[in-house]
Amino acid sequence: MIIRAGLGIGVLFVAWVALLAAVMSLSRSAPAALVPAALPGFAAALPANISVIEQTALGTVLASDNTDLVRQLYRAGAIVVLPAGLAGCAPLG
Image (tube, rainbow, N blue to C red; front, side, top):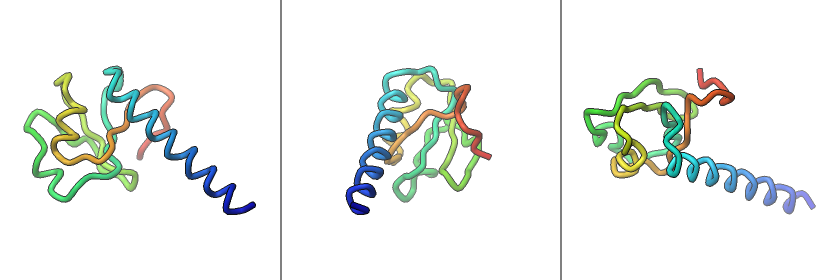
């Protein structure tokens, strides 16, 4: 029973993160991006037009005026890119 509940919570969490990542990829309404996990060398591979706004325990918050932000972050080594800075989002700091 406990194992099933743990698996259910894990599946729910993964589905929630996947939904947020899909929204970030399809919609350009988020003013910033949260990268909770990235490959080694991610920061060095970032293009010059992307600014690191904040680094927290949850990950790195980045922003750019470029409309191709999500694709550039994945190219630089982000494992997942989530929306940040939207009204209603929990504060990161």
